[in-house]
Image (cartoon, rainbow, N blue to C red; front, side):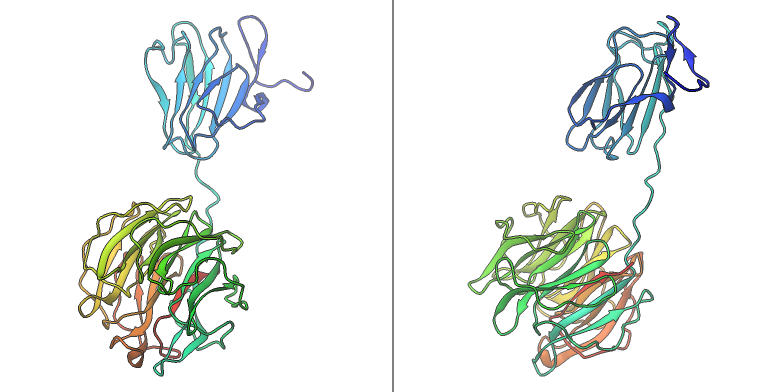
Length: 424
């Protein structure tokens, strides 16, 4: 040891015990289910996949010190469990269960004596900082106008929820496509119908500029859903592929690259829309099989779609959906046996609530997106069910999930369009 020694403790044997700043931290992150810990060491414990049982030294001296840190903030899911290996822990024998189950926790323990054994000198949870910035802007794009002509223009939405005028289209004009946020502050439009089904995509950068077409990957289809998941990735799923409904999905990386088809999970259907919830998960719900349904499928933070879950709310299709309030989602509008303007809120655990009485013009084939950090907006659609009834009205959604009355439309009236958030 070299340098100045400050505030170090002598063990009973006369050997100097390391303070936290002088601990020998393990260079390998611990991911296993067991660990035999040594005095004078610090360990980063990653319990993402499993709990970790730590066995403390059987022979300990006064002043022995060990520190453990929650590497991935997952101790609340899979605990850190302490086996004191014949010694006491806070005065209790090792027959007692000792576990730590708080996300972001750091545990600093020191051996005292045979009576009290190992004592935590600190076991605080560390704040989850820095916090990722939230999306502030949004974009509506593509669709079909009142003449049933497919378009590619877009309309940007400011952080105040005000929709901008038309921006000249980039990319192939089409309808029945979907969009999602990816990469933190960017968006992607993908798939749709140009007169035939396609799988092309268009990336949107953090300034809202739409890129030219990217060659398609995956099954060509329309009337599908899209959502963000895993904090910075996206997923497209379900839709109509020309021969019928499908349940295939395609993951989108945080650089906007669409992966090949993943085999279908859940009931194949079209007009099934998606939204992010719970900060890193997604949900697909409602749609059409041989009739309208309210089936839902949750998506975990690895992009894996779960099997069908019983639906809640009015069965319908051609609804739209989005995240709101940072970690919740909302479904709204659509068609059942008539046009609808009711909504269904989705909790941050993926539970769909019963119908909420509608606000605003009942319509079908609108689009929805988050904006302003924690709010959402529904926009456009058809108030008659056909292209000739296309509108450009919007409805803002507060961070409490309350839908506001109609706002006079801006931009070309259209339906069967898509929308996503972008830009910090």
